[in-house]
Length: 504
Image (cartoon, rainbow, N blue to C red; front, top):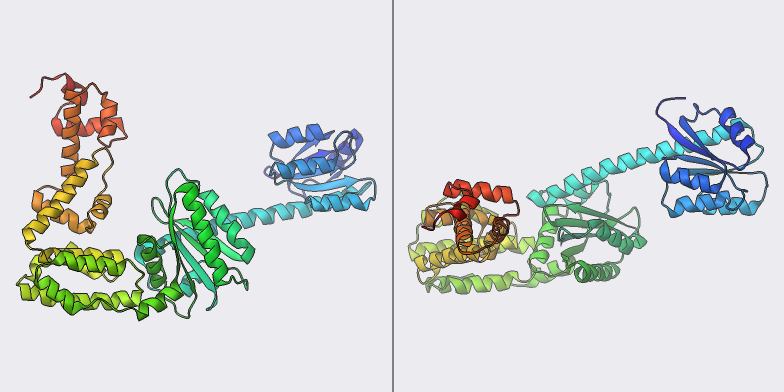
């Protein structure tokens, strides 16, 4: 017997049969390290419940409960044990029932021990193959997750067909591909989501992947398996029902883009369509139809926008831009818009006598202009930046933006307050917002937030009877120890000592 091998359970109500099998079978050839024994179904179930059992050699005809009952029990309990059933009666109904419940083999007794050994070797081979397959699938899933996370991190410049091939999913042009972006709250079980997605699309022969791309965002990929194909109307209908069910049951925000794969179709264009649909909350988007519509739609009148900017009404240009991007804009149209807006805004800035080093004072602002052709969200961030110079007073505009940031911080001191969350709330690019805030206030946004939280904490300490742990929570600190450290670092006194000290 080898040290690490399979565990086998031998079940028969005749002790002589059990002992004969234990002594007569060549266990080493079948890579079996441990052989358990049971004389009835009750004992067998007890061992199956408490020990790892890989293979079960079980007699069919036993008192009270049969070997078929034991087999059914393992299937109901989702156990993976491989069954080899033994019987002294050549009854075909037994064989049919055994196979129907997933028995690996069926042996007529009395059988030579060599025959039982060969059956065990075949069962061992099956288990080894399944383990190898599971290991391969696990490694493949990890590779797929890493690749799909990369899609959304830097919008890779490659064809969708090549990207799918890297995932091991060969899809020929003309086949339908669905990419969805899903925002899931932390308490939602994602396994339930993937199960429901597979249930909806596996009937059409579709492969389904669900991969975490960032903290609460997931990417759902649905594509054909082999030669199977799903009609677009069916896919649209199933996806609409699926997203509606997720929204109702889990408050999931999701959007997806369906399109027939085209030769050399750019992956970044497909992901951009998904992101646009997500940001505009369009739900299920037929990318082929949307792209055709987008090609027919006209870009905004840049001559009119230039005149509006000359009048100092940048907010009106921003409003019209937001209206334009409220609908799907194809990547091609976005690039056309970007170049037209860049040319128009440069002329408007020159006409207004606004120097470019004022508009682009640092690398963050310059990067803002470069990223504007990447997505609708980035384009709008750039437009907000430019139109801010054309309000009635640039100072008023900047003061308004600063007031919005400060007001948002004050209204949300009880939360964690991340830079990205604040920037999204005030419609500014995170990098630009941080640079602008420090330039205007003389301290970083992080320092300001910490200071405001500490001031609120000190006020609550000295004017209320709330416990220090509750005050920590009310200032957005879930970790009491961290709150105390920050407080002491800021005021040079612990919260408890500060409470006892006389008010300033």
